[in-house]
Image (cartoon, rainbow, N blue to C red; front, side):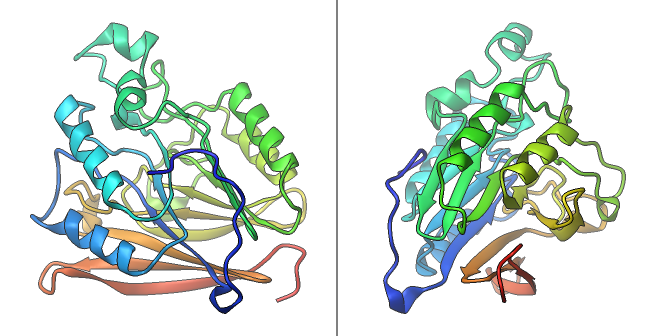
Length: 285
């Protein structure tokens, strides 16, 4: 399993589209259907993805057994993986206040990966993962300057025509379509740094509702934020409580598309719910 910087690779010409699976909020400990994790793994592997992105909340309570289940799922994916922790992946104050404050991601680092700024590069694609789950926040997240510096350093070394993707757990822009939401502390600076670094797509989760929205920025171009629903858990919100969704992303020269896929409990597989396409910033479609 690859959860860190990979050597830049090249796809064969007959496979020009770069394909990513984006899942979030798996929440082992609150799995919605027996076998849904296996169905997800089978579909992602059959689709021959170039990268699997997991934007946090692998567990419900950051227990050792939940982390072991999460590790087994990640190991089952055939593609390279980028994964960042979510707020449920750190111990709650009432379970272990010292660990929560001093070493909040210690279980994630011990079981999943100790790389909290994972990267992935291949021709046409550059991806940076950022940890926003920190011990002194409750659930809204925190962006640290050191993470922004690492992101800017990474993207400064990547080809200018790559699709640049930022992976975080928490939201960096308020999305009223998701209801009452909070954003990470330092979110405005993170968006400014992302735009300055040429990021065109942000992959996140946290709210358990699938949503894809393009936002205008002060730099005169849009940045797309894809918030994945909960891929496998019972923790959907409101009218989304019984819904499990994740994303397929296809990157073509000059454009990219995001397909939101929904689990059908009666047929026990994921089906396409909707797809949205975007023109690359500054590139002809």
